[in-house]
Amino acid sequence: MAKKVIKKSFRKTKKTTAPVSPFSIYWAKQNYYFLFLGFAIIIIGFYLMSVGPWNSSAALVVSPILLMIGYLLVFPASIFYKKRTKRDTSQEDNIGSVKS
Image (cartoon, rainbow, N blue to C red; front, side):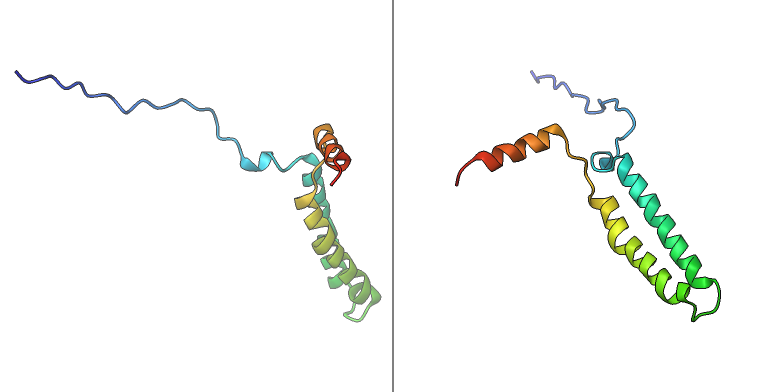
């Protein structure tokens, strides 16, 4: 006599909630503040570059300085800024107290 084969159902799916963004780990409220500050500085820099004659001091000096601050300082700060927690500082203290 032949044995009966019982087929298992593989259609069982897990019910999940809405997907969690992987950036929520890294981006805090302060990061978004830096990002919007960078956008504001860059918009002001381009505005100053477009106002008045092309050889004004605002277009030749102030505007490039604002654009460099926005692109080279504020945007990277918005990406790399991470608020230190008590756990981070305690780990650094433990590493510093170990003698090599």
